[in-house]
Image (tube, rainbow, N blue to C red; front, side, top):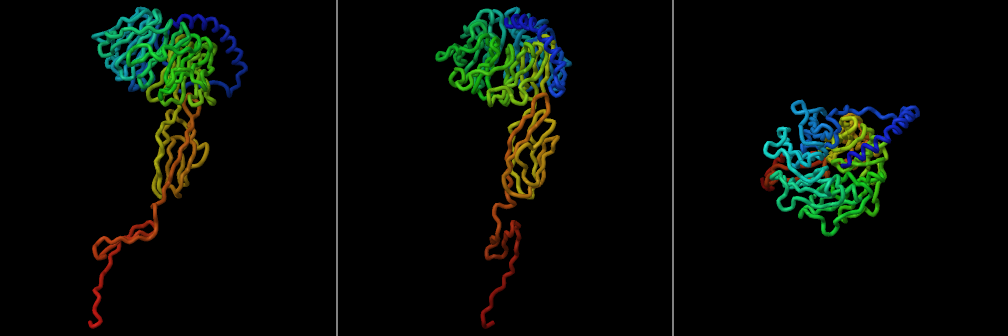
Amino acid sequence: MPTSPTRSRRAILAVIGGLLLAIGGLLLSPSAATAAPLVSPIAVGSEPVNVAFSPDGTYAYVTNYGDGTVSVIDVTTNSLDPTTPSITVGTGPEDVAVSPDGKYAYVTNYGDDTVSVIDVATNSLDSTTPSITVGTGPGYVAFSPDGTYAYVTNYGDGTVSVIDVATNSLDSTTPVITVGTAPANLAFSPNGRYAYVANTGDGTVSVIDAATNSIDATTPTITVGPNPRGVAFSPNGKYAYVDSFVDSYVNVIDVATNSLDPTTPTIAVGSDPEAVAFSPNGTYAYILAGSGGDTVEVIDVATDSLDATAPTITVGELPRGVAFSPDGKYAYVVNQDDGNVSVISVTSIGSALPPTGKVRSTYAFTVPATNGVSFAVTSGSLPPGLTLDPTTGFIGGTPTAAGSSTFAVTVTGGDTGPVSRSYTITVTPLLATTGVAISPLLVGGGAGTIVLGGVLFLLAIRRRKLQSSGE
């Protein structure tokens, strides 16, 4: 499986890396030092490899290859669950995925060719079907977006096992799909149309038509760089990133054509990338690069390049797996040699937009930031009468003039770089029209209303009966 060559190569580089780090520590300026993470790493089992969150973000499950267990993390406290800190599974657990409905967690056991089935409600092995036998050397697992099927890559025999989730058994119609040599990670497109399988042995990505559980007839494979391992789709389904372990870059696939993107076919990253994950909002992609740096490479998806502000985040020794919490607040990185999980507090800004304001009316809007510590208007200006609270992101006050104001808010905090977003607030006049308008309320003009300068008046009119000249 991919673990052994990774560890041997890292062991050789460890001595060199240690010397370089020792020298670098003497030369490193104070301004370049890495700040301590906001949340301490979480100690888990022996040789942890991968991680997955439950859809509701309550739990995270970490596979521990060295001791045959899965650690259960309570995400609300970023610590092991006090009730069920670990679950014993099969031999050599490699990967874990949670079904979209949150009912099951599937764990691939590389050492005994099975998939353990965890009942998430009880955090224990399923009482009816505790395990499913699959192919040789199961490595990775992914559920289809609708939860009907789960695909398992079998590193040892070049196949993908198809599990019918309703029965927790191999699909009776198509139990197995033949793919490339030594398949590693896989992922479903967000719309469920395709599944991409990274084949480490032949430098290709197999394209599976998920509707038929068969290799796509039009584009059966996509040639990428040597030794591809990690694969992930952007949340909008437009692109897929596939890392190339040997050449240290990420392949960018245009999903619409099932081919490398003609504009940016590759993105250079750090040494030995082997896992990739997109943030839920699709702004960033995290790439794990362990040799000589043990870092997370941060890609700005909008530019298909390393982030200009914070291109790397330092984590633990030999990072192997990465996943974002569903709300995007945290990214968990599994460090195999340290036996722990780094918790990255991700700073982000949500999609909510400010409401329209009105002159002389109280206004309120809070910038929807996650892990925000400080807020500042870095370009443009707020409408007259409004201010931004620098610690909470609250925009409030009473607008004094009509018009539209465009400005940018920059948020800092968390373990990542600052993020910015542009907003426009439109303030309307007190009333859209002003002037004088008289409207009768009673037939004959007994009463009426008048709008004067934006103020509504109620008028009572006394009527006098006109007398004839002879009266």
